[in-house]
Amino acid sequence: GAVVSQHPSRVICKSGTSVKIECRSLDFQATTMFWYRQFPKQSLMLMATSNEGSKATYEQGVEKDKFLINHASLTLSTLTVTSAHPEDSSFYICSADPGTLYQETQYFGPGTRLLVL
Amino acid sequence: DAKTTQPTSMDCAEGRAANLPCNHSTISGNEYVYWYRQIHSQGPQYIIHGLKNNETNEMASLIITEDRKSSTLILPHATLRDTAVYYCIVRVAADSSYKLIFGSGTRLLVRP
Image (cartoon, rainbow over the protein chains, first blue to last red):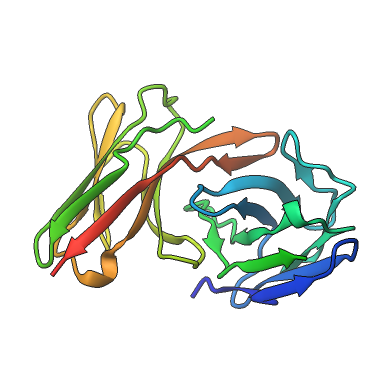
């Protein structure tokens, strides 16, 4: 149980284009999903917290107009990197929390590797 | 900023117990300690979490000191597949939700 998928697993795009990454919880509903970014040889950095049906909460320094997050259902959140540039190249990882009474635990997707040329 | 500090790297022999320490001296009374691990180029995998009491599951044991300022993750019989970066994380409250703030983690190498 507690499986989270991401699509695509890797994407290469040209500078200036937009890229959409999907995060799905496959066997549970998630009221809260999280988006992280990880640069090579670095730790995960939280970008934003996404609640179903409401606006995402972005971490300091993360541009909300550049990284658009939509959490339209209890099983799907999307991250759109708008007007991507080479410095946006990174490993993007989502997580989802089933929100059970017993434990609040995030289950992570496999990640999406983005390369902007 | 992460509220935890961990050794940069450790190693252990296959079949032996791996004991990974973590310091979280500024932890608050209602903040949980979580452990995740990340194998290269994959998403983090949940291992275990706890508040005050020691916890055990099929993957590992978590020993939390009485003052809650440190903890140890124990992999009882390490295998080569346990080679990964292990993150000790304090879950902090945030608005109406919470955050997991990842630190640098410990790179564990299990030797044959």
